[in-house]
Image (cartoon, rainbow, N blue to C red; front, side):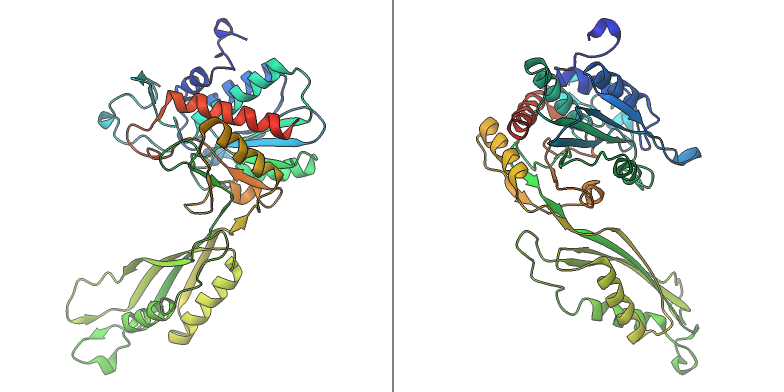
Length: 387
């Protein structure tokens, strides 16, 4: 494989990251970035299954690629889609040009997460160059819709993998997990997330005649006060305390002398492994009925909490990080959600990637040196678990 064939050298994570960044793939990924990546993997001896799901504007490119047929089976999961760059005039370097300046690679997706994908491919390519016959299997689960609703992405591919007998023994998601420096943090779980929209109907009226009206704001405030009256919990072994945050209260009333006809609030609960989405939904519904029996409550759970208890694979990942960086990473469950929430339903999963300080920002970037460090960590990890 070489540049003469139109593909970057697979062992070079910087060149591969640049090639991927130069394929604009604002969510949902239109496809070229994945076809480039699939072609690189095919030349490394992987069998690639392209698995698009959805129709029209929701059509999402995905693929699964595997090399080897035996265990242990280690999977790398990632996404080629990126968030919009916003006002490109604010970028010091064009967001899809993949410029390198003073040892820093700039571009949308540089660390979230085309850089992580490039590092894993380079690690695998180097491992194959050293040992043509791998002891076990390596696979890639790549989606084009992680930054969006994720309806036709990783979930659908996992269903296909289960049907085809392709579920791995362990999965690493290459999300940028390090707050400040390589080796800071490994994610071994995530909190669940629940969103609730509460609408309380009342009877509109003049504020001077409250007995002729029914003020829904008062009922809504009582609901919110009751929901916030005490902490949900004090945290658990690997999780911080669950958090309920009111994100919006809307009445839409421009008059000072009118009791409104309805009031609406939105809230989010980030919950740990002491709760389930169903139990929290029931609790929210009950509190609403106590203060406003006819309240309309719409609840959506974007993901349950999950935890991969430290085992041999996570230990091997931590040891690889310590060997390459000299740092002892924290095992953490904080932050937002990722596609690991879907993978956790099928196999143990951890997350480790680049430094994430610039993700979703103008001038998203990663140090070129960090791409090499991450490649060495991934290769060392693979050598440990496939030995």
